[in-house]
Length: 138
Image (cartoon, rainbow, N blue to C red; front, side, top):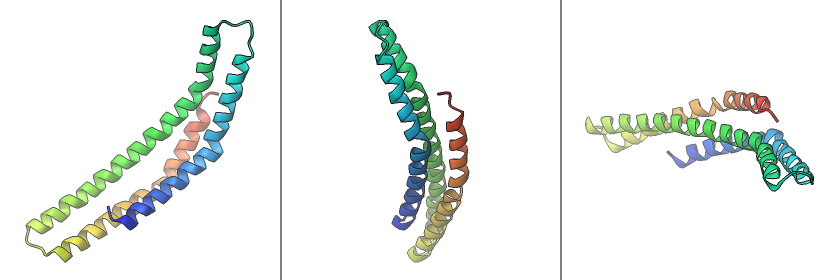
């Protein structure tokens, strides 16, 4: 993918991830640490019970991180498929006898379109992730 296009996608995804981290993940981390500290204060529990308690505290954050990772992987896979389609179109054009400038131009337009399409998906992906993060039981 052309560097400018890649930078644009990375910036948009990074902005989304930072927003999720500030608004959701960070709060979940705080609750997890407080919950874990409360587990450690339970002086009558066995070591095993305290560890199980701490594990329960970590579960929501682990679910949230898994959710975000999965969504980002799907996004990346879709973008990769789109750019691979562009590669195929460029190869077909080149194989049909087109000159390099025409192939480069096609590739640039096609990848640019992929990036535009996928960057436009980020707001709905963010909304979906926020809703799913909100539904995780604390």
